[in-house]
Image 1 (tube, rainbow, N blue to C red):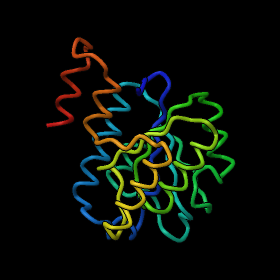
Image 2: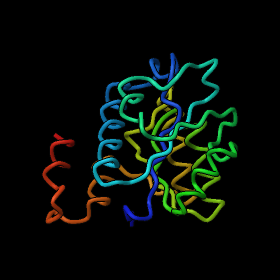
Image 3: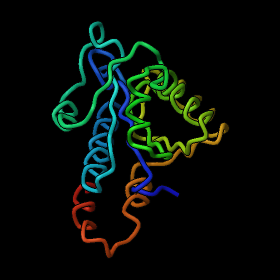
Image 4: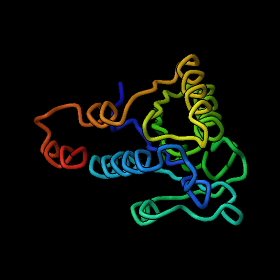
Length: 179
């Protein structure tokens, strides 16, 4: 089960023209924003990445503004774990649960999830907050990650798992994010 004091949100490569051609981009964007805002509300650390930003561009709005106070690590490796600065961020945080959101599901999200699993971490992929250009690639990657032991869950399941209790004073704020 997700625990907000053990979790880190990893925001992967939502940037440039690639973001514009994602399948069901509007659904993706709405869920990305919900997960980011929930993490911030519940004080779950966030680490973002950008794949070769000098070629693909920087993180797209509104996410760039939402993440203005969060570390964004440039990388060339498809797996976030292939970038030493990303791994330094994770080591600094000292947590073992990772929630992955972003693009593309079948490349960077997939490779990051598998690498984190190999390090012995618990990995959660937010199924409706990841996308690929081709829906079949997304579906196959989600199934492969699930087969490897990654928890593949919808946005609301992740948000309520992080909150844990309707008696939490932030429950009403979380409900506003969902509606």
